[in-house]
Image 1 (cartoon, rainbow, N blue to C red):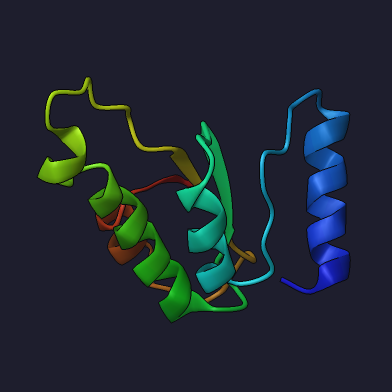
Image 2: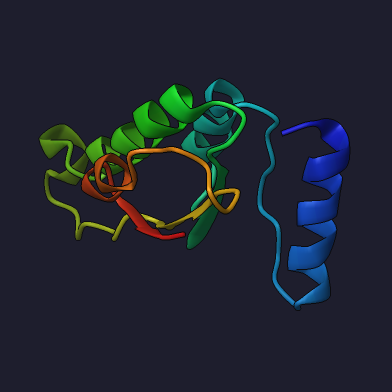
Length: 104
């Protein structure tokens, strides 16, 4: 998302009473942010980088399925992935669901 769109999303999340533990303007930066925090919910803007969003969703799920990471520890559930999609946008929503997106 653009910096202005990101700022608007962050403001809306905070206004709803939630803590923002990280923010990113692209999926690569988002992966780095998630590496250092425990997020319960991830808002994923699919419109700007549809292929990157799909790859990102898969990576988030895979990070929670890593056997080395889980050795001797209670697994944490992956974050709730909420995809932000413009109405009428031609995307393969089934592929996003299969990648771990929970809602749109």
